[in-house]
Every structure is written in structure tokens, then in C-alpha cells.
Length: 211
Image (cartoon, rainbow, N blue to C red; front, top):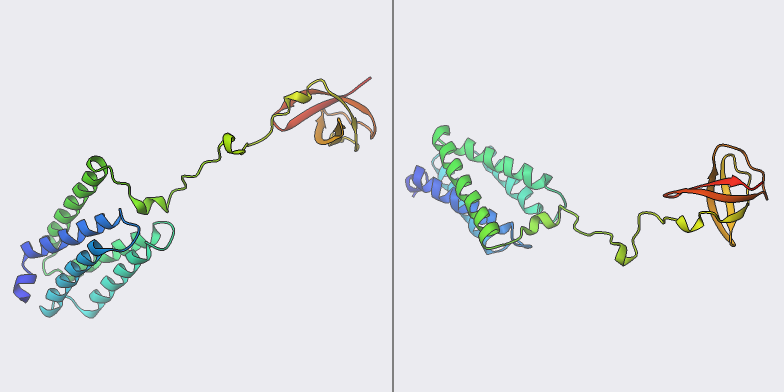
């Protein structure tokens, strides 16, 4: 059994099953059957290499930490946990392998097949990666829903009002019983002085004293 599980072809097959299972889990909001299949394939891999004396307790612990971090990715925002978990998982695979070259080839084949499955799921089956939905904000603030970046008060152009405070050069004025923050062209205008709006630049309302 140990000789079978450490065979390079079987190793490649187990890693490919694990990789495609992880890819499939990207399209699921919960850890499901495919995740358990991938986890079981990895357990078989490490069981064979542990029994053969190729993988020590440190390698097994690194593998366990990687699995735990990947699992936490389904509950935590961002991709930090998943990235660290994947890095720990790949490192544990290299540490468990008897021949780094053979292990690298097996991992490369598994990754290529997993990427092909990912491309097939997205481009052909039109599946959406649920994992990315938690990493990206898709909500938009639409004007139709009442969200505006600022109110353009072009309706105040030419209007006359009273300086409620001293404008030095900014302050508060009253136009038709509405308090509005205004700014002068640079001049100081005393309180209760009659003013008129000469320019509106976004939220910046420029006023001038009425002679």
C-alpha cells in the first residue's frame, strides 16, 4: 500500500484530484463534498509518505496548518488566509516528496489541470467564483437610489441673500431662509451685509457684496 501511494503516477493523480476539488470549492459558498474528496486525497498522499518515512511530524503539521488556513478562507474576508494556506500546503508537499524534481512535476501537472478546470467552469459553464464575491465590493451608489456625491446648487446663481456671519472669506449666508456655506472672492464681508451669488463650483459657492 505504501509503495502504491508513493508511486509518482499515483502521487500526480492524488494531487490532481485535490487541486480540482479545491477549484470546485471556489464556486461553492460552503465547504462541501468536493472539499472532503480533495482533503481525503491529500490525506492519502501524506499517509503513504509518512508510512514510508519520507514525511515527518513537522511536514504533517505544516500540511494541517495549510488546510486550516484554506478552510478559514471561507469565513474570513480577503484572501490572505487562503494564500498563506496554499503556500504552506505546497511547501509541505515538497518536504514530503522523496525526489523534489518528481514532486515538482507532479505539482505542476496538478496545477495545470486545476487551472484548465477553472477556465472551463468560468468560460464554458459560466460559473461565478463565490469566493471572490466576499473579496470585492459590488454594491454601487446610484443616483436613482438617492445617492449623490454632492448637490450642484446652480439654482443659486444670481440670488441675493444676507451674510449671517462675517465672511473671512468663508462663512455662512442665508438665501430664502436657507443657511448655506459660502466663500467670497477674497474680500472680507461684514455680518448682515447684502450679498449675491456670482459663481457655483460644485460645493463651492462664491458670493460678492451687493453695492
